[in-house]
Length: 172
Image 1 (cartoon, rainbow, N blue to C red):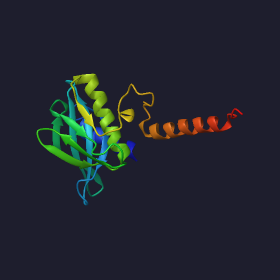
Image 2 (image 1 turned 30 degrees about the horizontal axis):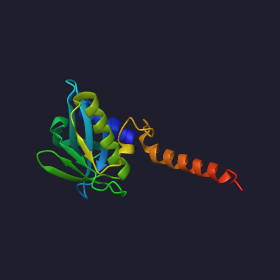
Image 3 (image 1 turned 90 degrees about the vertical axis):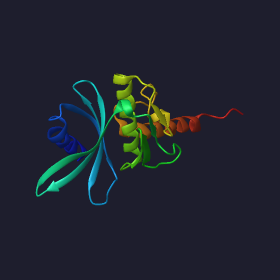
Image 4 (image 1 turned 90 degrees about the horizontal axis):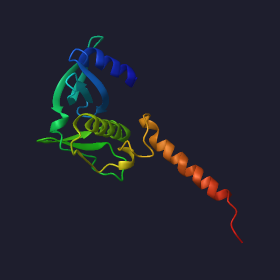
């Protein structure tokens, strides 16, 4: 489903604006409408963070840009609480925007993408706080292009270690 939405967003909104869509997550802003938080790169290699409203008119899907910022203006991403599984986070521009992602995993996917694009294009000191850095940084042993499998891979690693330790004979 999300790959179809991404294709539709690219075709109807980002390609006409000459931008490449790198990541999008669903955010909760309104009960009635669906909103996406998108990260894109322009032809001039400027990274944009965009909130898009998704609605239908008849059978046609429509997308409308409601907010737009440059990554250069982003000062900090605050994940609220690194120790709990919650979808809430703040984007600190000149003003602080409190957002709720569809899931904690999508919140981390957004932060990873912003961090990666910051290192690729801006190389500025962007603060990403109250996130588990193991799942944010690309230099981590747990880093993967398949972002949704990070937690599962870590659990399997620990389970395998526990199994090996339980099979080792104890010295008498």
